[in-house]
Length: 163
Image 1 (cartoon, helix red, strand yellow):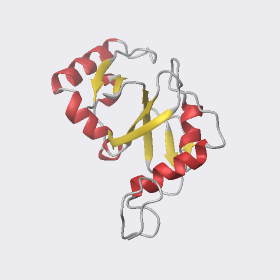
Image 2: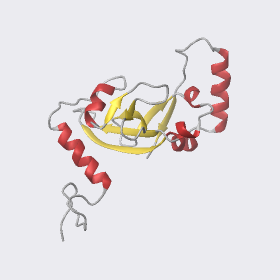
Image 3: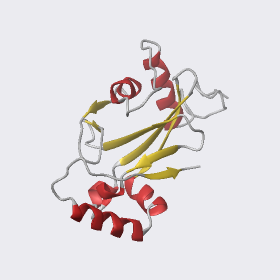
């Protein structure tokens, strides 16, 4: 029986046992030509963009990248924590549309010492909000945002851990 080119598990497929393995192999191929370092403050969107060549940088209020072929939007959160710890601003997630809830929320995990990519985990923005942001926090966020309607820089942060 053939084996997957990425994870080396037996498979009945041609090259990869799953879409995840195919995507991981694509990322590894892309990384061969780049010196990616995800350490430091900030989102590091230009570095993250090198990891996912099918995505284009597009800074929207709820997303960082878009797949131009499918129109799928992506919000990226980099983390050096194996528990996929990230900070989110609940004031951004008040009254989300169904389309917004379907934005892919991608945790990009890296090695804290080297800054090198380890893995990514995908869910939806709606899934993150449902799992980590209680309704009372969204209500509080709406009240706070209402107090500072002319301050585009106003935000507060809520820590989340996926694993």
